[in-house]
Amino acid sequence: MRDPTPPLTLTAITDRTRTYIRDTFLYMRPDWPLQDDDPLFGSGVIDSIGVMELIGFLQSEFGCTVAEDEITERNLGSIGAIARFVHAKCNADGVRAA
Image (tube, rainbow, N blue to C red):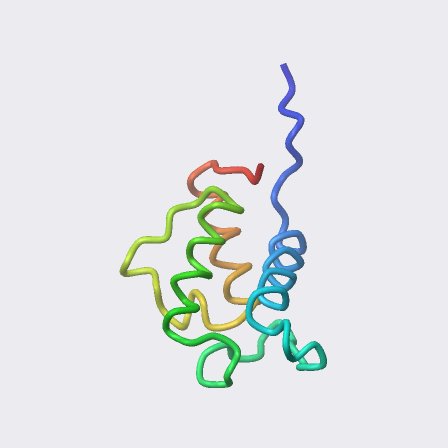
């Protein structure tokens, strides 16, 4: 039987993550410019509490587990970094988005 779930692409991860960040953290600032490689921390987009909310979103939305030692700016510091990190985790773990 064929799996009807399409593969999780970098574009899909990027788009869903950008929408979440805009809806959750930038809803009061809709004109805030947010490019894929813009820093999320230290720029006023996400604070330390927001990191925990972001991790909860990534785990529920994409079905991957984020370990404590993976909570780094390299993995979560921008939308592009998040997309690459989640894409690699999903491919390595065989996880697919719901």
